[in-house]
Image (tube, rainbow, N blue to C red):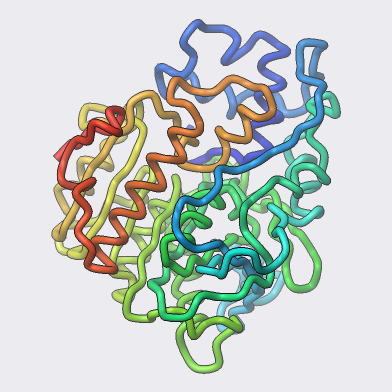
Length: 405
């Protein structure tokens, strides 16, 4: 199975409960996170299995790590329709519709706490994976995960680089909320893009929350998924930076300083977007295979490859990273993180731990810290022109991070 085919936060929680109850996957080995193969237990566990008495029964209360910058994180959700493009996965649904969460530098103490997701998105995710009631995760407490973002918060004055974030396949956009709020707190406007019909549900402008139309398709062409996401992102950038903008606070965006980071297939989409759209000046791939690996001369702008050591050492099975590294022509870094798993770069492991399920050797909190620090440092250096010593070489504060260049 392709590594980009990963699961949403709810899927992680549900399937972890199932494999714990059945003795499969993580419960079956002493060090289940040591190899990429072990993570396939999440992909192959039967989503309709019945949890046993060993599954947690306590109520789930999720809290994401607080942002670390000087600003608060404001949040708006906008809905966009690309009238020039039919939906690539369900053409009968009409033009491509997208839900996008905008996170921005805000004045502390303003606004009201923002939900993690809508009730419909939470309910759709739980249904999508057949989560047992004994897990303690409900649409109400999942949607109410503490995000440290605030609806309607008063924006800080000024203009800020735009960072577009694209999640993993089957992962809803909010699984990158920890990174988004931290970037906003350090002076970035962030656009979290939900790619409709590619996960368990994104609530659209008409109130519908359509589920995944292309999941569980063994013949799915991931090159096409990455290319489609590149079109999504370019359209979002258009609507945020040109003419009659789609967001009330678009004046905060410095349209000349745009970066993109993605997890899994979202990382592949970052490369595909940079090839197609020269406005994106810097890109980050977080633990995703390239679909396809860029050819020499196609990306001559800064690019960061940040991945789990188990997946993306030069000797690993994923050869696309070596191919991409050789092809990248601009400033570039290839960093691997010891003890991380595929979802260490998202909110997923934090939520998994808080629900009482197994986590990788790298603690979920460290995964968030490392992701935030290195992505922010990379964008600071490439979009703001602020040199970051963190990118110069190994750091005693981050011994898990190894430079492969």
